[in-house]
Image: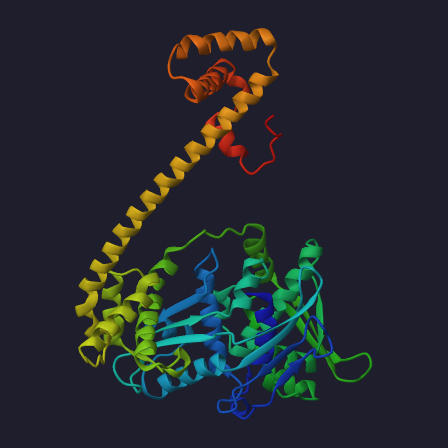
Length: 482
């Protein structure tokens, strides 16, 4: 997981389902620390993203990690995948409504982070973690989500490309509740940093209890009694982390100043094993098949279906709640004929053609009749472009030949002028033999100059650049030819 995203997640997600929807005020963490400040502004109609949103978030990050490298911006999943990843046994009805709302809670929450650039300057990013969400439903808005694609924010992608991330054991995380998952992610990050500095000694990490509730757990209620924390709040999740071997032990004790409580954590064998596996023997494929399949089967067809509605209605993607499965299937067919990168042009062309006959297109399938015309037009344009390119290449080659001939003649003239008199006379004799009585006056002088340059260039070829040498030297300053 990307490091900034890890910090943001601590403020973004509320792990108390009763309080999450009521929390609409801006949340600020480390507001006095220039390069670590995080501000989260929940959507006023939806409130702070809750436990289900956190489950979806973890599931999507897990799916994204499966894609490997290069880092991808889109994460796609089917109905069955998301059900399995978030632990749903049923789909549709209230479960589907909860999923849609949870995605919207993340999408419409705005994040502002402060950080230090590589050059040492302080910078600020404002973004939504999932700036774009594409949903497919069978027909109506009440139908269950069939497929979904979310886009990760650009600052997160840039940070991942800069190797700012930690590796997590998602199999272990699947056994945890959302509080346990949040604790695991933050503790793994801190353990890894400490263990990297001293791998022969298991680290101990301490943090104030109220800071854990605020910075890691989205504003969880702060209790004053250790027994309540142990019995009803963090204790069950920490014991689970011990049970799976991630923690060797934990302790809740009063702070030295008697103001609040301190939690102390020691990593277990599972952390050591994962650290060695992820960081000492880490290898990622350059591109995994799973991403390519998701792009072709889900992300690109969904985006094409949304693109069609955008162009037909004039509404932005964020205002389109879903697209029907029928349009997604049509998009898959169209993508077998038209590359994804050309889809905006095809849709504009097809809608323009439909408008000429006052055809009110309702579905993407209505544009299939314009496919042959578009493909034919593109083929003609491609043929014209290739012909124009060939003509341009020929013109450029001819200009280059003329330019090289001029250079060669000037170089030969300069070389001739620098030769000893005896060698000059030898060349002039060859010139006279070649041109004989051809021409007269200016024409004869011209022919003599051309013959002299050619004979000089042939006789002293090693002192004049070949076409390849001349071409590679173009742009560099040459000594003047005199």
